Length: 240
Ligand code: PGA
Image 1 (cartoon, rainbow, N blue to C red):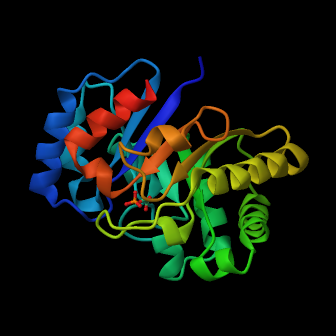
Image 2 (cartoon, rainbow, N blue to C red):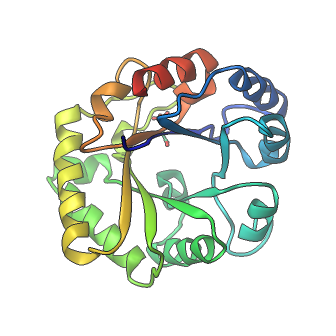
């Protein structure tokens, strides 16, 4: 059976003390064998959370790497990260361009870590029926220089991403249509790339099984709900 993914993107919801506490609680949860569980803490909590999760079957990811400055890919790797989120919509909104995302993707791949590349359309683009075109453009630009063999893609409609748990969930059938388009794009343009396709945006224990059907999406990138251990437990159960 194909493994499913639950990736927790804690963003800036938890401070270092809260992050340690949530991580310690997660250690007591049994991770089903069928699921790869990854926690991406905030930058300031990364080192602490890595220590708390050491020896558990939960893996660590970084929410970002800098092209210059503080959090280099090397530093993320030294801290025990195996995954790095690249091109999250909040980064794109604060000025990250496709060219920058492409550079980050290569840095992550060359250092032996697995990139989690986020793509997705804005509310305006969604309403204008531009979803597929926008995502194709994001993928084409960013992957032009990518030489890796595998990649995790998180399709996150920007308009469906919650603010502290409040958001408009995208109907699964709409998300599935986009998943079909993304898969067709890869078959045509990058047939040799092994793509793991995830969904993200207002995912919680109540809807995760509707998105992660194993055919369109094999996992979820979860923000707010992933900061609650009871939710994580329920989502893991829903995926197994
Ligand atoms: P959300 O965040 O689950 O709170 O909508 C998802 C994300 O931004 O990755």
